[in-house]
Image 1 (cartoon, rainbow, N blue to C red):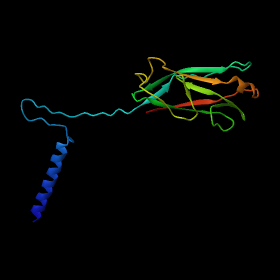
Image 2: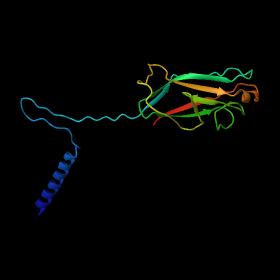
Image 3: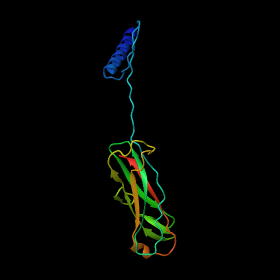
Image 4: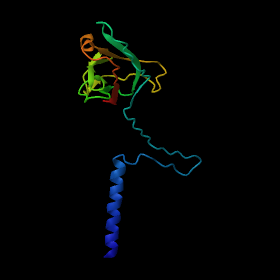
Length: 176
């Protein structure tokens, strides 16, 4: 009786192996003994979506003395290997009050600014989609492919106290 149970377990195990092989779980094949022998293995590789932003420069908006709009820009390189594209979420941080939008601060005084990414206006802390892969190399040796523009409305600038207003603009790039 004990032999019957062992035989049954072997048959179940062998049946499971045959089902797994038929389902393509084991694609490797061994060669046979002879003057030559050939074996094969299946290869697989998964490439995950990746992004990178680089080549950014600080933006100096200048000195406000007239009613002219204060603006500046930096070029950048966006790498994305996904044809689906990438997303951008922009925020700003500065010493001073609580930031609920793009703001430069001088102590408690705040000055709003706007941001455009590749001619697309960005809303504060809001995901914005950009479609398509961007550049073919992650070190951006082919050059910059993006422009980030920042602007301060002169009406807002004319109604605040004197001083130096600062902020850090953060651009979070993520694959779609």
